[in-house]
Amino acid sequence: MTFQRNVGGIDRIARTILAVVFLGIGVLVFTDGRQALGAGALIAGAGLGFNAVSGFCGLNAMLGVNTCTRSADS
Image 1 (cartoon, rainbow, N blue to C red):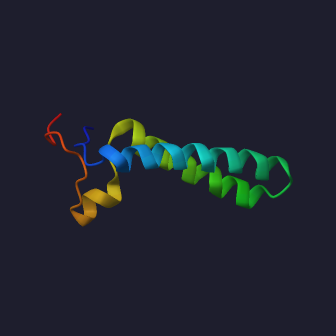
Image 2: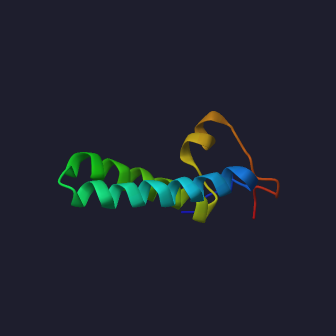
Image 3: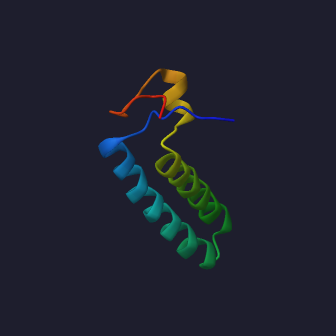
């Protein structure tokens, strides 16, 4: 399966920062005994991390949003 890039620039940087924040919060909260909240934060962080690394966001694709300045084919 191939994904056409639709996440770039500041959007990609913001998703990277948010992924690190959510993953950190998820680990701290999960180990503090609040597993449901921690798991939610870990899942959110993993999703944002995937978006940042792959340059693809399913929600952006459904809404027709493209913040990537390069060609969508690369």
